[in-house]
Image (tube, rainbow over the protein chains, first blue to last red):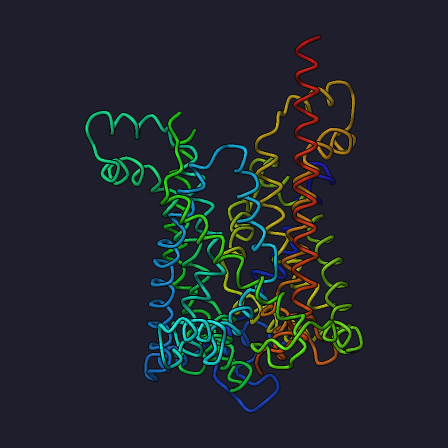
Length: 298
Length: 272
C-alpha cells in the first residue's frame, strides 16, 4: 500500500462517510429524540465533553415515541399507504404506456434506431421541474385538454383533473416514461427474432407468439423498468406538490411539511426512517434482479 | 429477417412520441403568446423574453445555479472517478462493502431524505448555509452517478494496455495519465455532463441545504409556479429546453461522426 493508493481510496471514502453516512446517522438519532422548544429544537443533544457517562445518559433519554406517534396519527399511515398505492398504480400505467413504444422501437429499421433512442433520452436531460410544469397548463379546469375536448364536443363540462391524484398519475407516467422504455427496449433488442418466427411457423397466432415468446423474453427489462419507476415515485415530492393539490397525500410531501411548516424535526426524521425501511424491500429485490441478469449474460 | 412494422407499431410509436413531446411543444408555443393568460392565444410576441432579461432576481438565481453546477460537477467528477477506480481496481480493502454501499445508496435515496439529512448535518456542525452547502450536497449525490458511469467503462476495457505501460517502465501515475485516462475519458465527460444537469435540475436537495441569501433557479421557478402558470416561466423553460436539445443533439452528432471515423480507419487498416 503506497501513499497514493491510500489517498485514492481515502478521499472519496471519507467524503461519503462525512456527507452521506454521518448525516444519515444524525437522522436516525434525531428520530429517537423528543421535540423541545430550544435551538436545536430537540433533546437530548449529545455532549462529547461529558465522556462515557454523558453517552450513557444520552442513550437513556432516547425514545421510540416518534414512531409510536406515527402509528397513532392516521395522517401518517394514510400517507404511506397512499404513496404506495400511487407509486404502484403509476408504475403499472407507465408499463402499459411504455411497452408498445419499446416494442415498436425494437422493430423499427436499424438506421432509425439511434434517432429514436436519442428522442427517448432527450426529455431525461431536460429539467424535471419544467416537464411537470408543462402539464399544469394542460390539465387545469380551463386548460388546453378541457378546451380541446369541449371543442370536439366529447364533454360539455370541464373534467376536473388538476389537483387530484389523476394528475399525479399522469405526471409520474410522463416524467418516468424513459426509465421504463429503455430497459424494455434493451431486452427486446437482444431477442432473437427467429424464435418468434419459429412459433408462428409451428402454428401459433401472432398474438399467442407474442404472449408465449416475446413477453417472457422481455421480462428482465420489464422488472428493471418497474423498479426504476416505483422506487423514485414512492418518495416523490415535486409532482404531488404541483399537480396533486392538497387532496393528494404522499409521504414526501408530509415529510417536507413536517420539517418546513411544523418545524417538528424529530417527527420528520422518523417519517424519513420509516420511508427508508419501506424502500429497502424493493431496492433489495431490484439488486437481486440485476445480479441474476448479469449472471445470465456472463 | 422478417421484422415488419405493423400498423400497431406505427400507431404506438406516433402516439408515444406525441405524448412525450406535445407538452413541451405547447409550453414553447405559449411562451410567444402576447396574452398574460397562458391558455388563450392573443398573437405573437417576444415580450416575455424581454421581461425575463430584465428580471434581476431570476438572473441572480441563474448565476447561483451555474456556479453551483460547474463547481459541484467538476468536484464530483474527480471524486467519482477516484471512487470508480477504487471500486473496480483496488481489490480488497477494509470497509469495501460499506464503500460500495455508500456509492449505490444515494442513487435510490429519495431527495427529501438526502436533503433533510444533509441539512441536519450542516446545522449540527454549525455551517452557514448558502452556495457552499448546496455545492457540497450536489457533489455528494452526483459523485455516485459519475462513479457508476465511469466504473462501467473501467470494467470493459483491456487491462493489458495498462500492464504493457507498467512493464515498459511507466509509474502507475504516468500510466493513469497516458493510458487509462484517455480511454475512460468519454465516460468521464458524460459523467461530468450528467452531474452538471443533475445539479441544474435539483429542487428538493437545494431547498433543504440553501440559506436565505442564495436561491437557485429551480427554487425560484418552483415558488413562481406554485402560484400558477406564467408566460415568463414558459419563456425561461423554452430557453432551457433549447439549450439542452442543442447540447444533446450536438453531442450525439459528434459521437456518431467519431464512430464513423473509427469504422473507416478500421476498414482501411484491414485493407492494408
